[in-house]
Length: 150
Image (cartoon, rainbow, N blue to C red; front, top):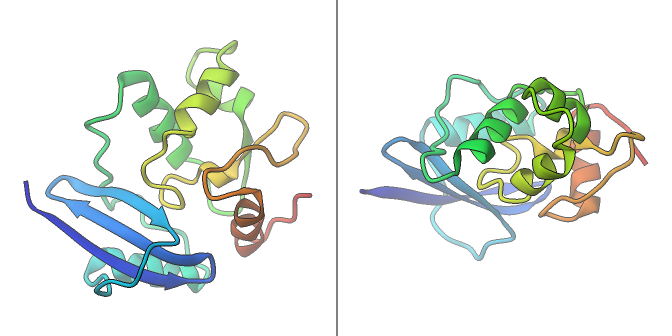
């Protein structure tokens, strides 16, 4: 299966973007220089950097994710730009009200941060908790979307 790979310069570091036939596969932080990404995904990233939400119609390839993880990632992608949910709220939305930790573990395996906005998921008390790009980057992404969370 052919893949496309390119980078995008962003306020959160250089992002590596991998796209396959079924859609976006991975977003990586702090990658070395490579060819600039082009096409619809590049346009979507540039629009996001300019303050626009990602179009939900752009496909993300989650075929390699286990079923529960896929459900969590799909539910996370539905959290609106500029809003947050807690891990517990996401678990309830999935019909698994006692699975907040499992939701957190699934989000820790998010192959496409920013696109699947796990930075929008916070602790029940509203505080920032884990993010594979680091808590300061999570805070920067939330600020970019108009939210201030300590």
